[in-house]
Image (tube, rainbow, N blue to C red):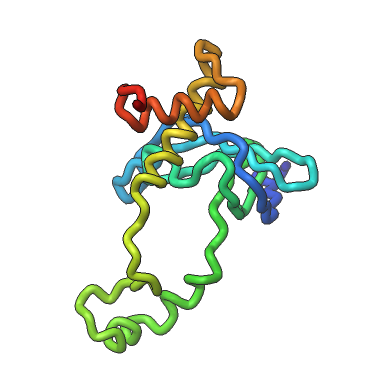
Length: 165
């Protein structure tokens, strides 16, 4: 634009993650390393939207096949995603310090409603599933074209290289 301003277009996109591919990293002003990923989302209408999303995790915390809602912003540099705020936590920070006093604990953080421990095996399995699919698609060196082949590779990885008896 002649006046030096940049044109931006933002919209909410929700759907199923179809791909998450590492795209680099950078150090933010806070000193934290931000890992970037190219993510593709199927919005359920036949449109695949692709953009860059960042995370402080070196493995993106949502796997292929997961549902996600993002705010998609497009400018002259391309399309970027920012995970949309979860309405469940929308009121978490309202009330300032009063929330911490009312909770009566020194941590003052959010306490999940359920005290069940996370299913770490399921979490690890999901990460392996995502990694296997991404690696197979990228390298084209591994035969991984059916759901059963993906399952076999995941089983092998989860057994730490030892075939199941």
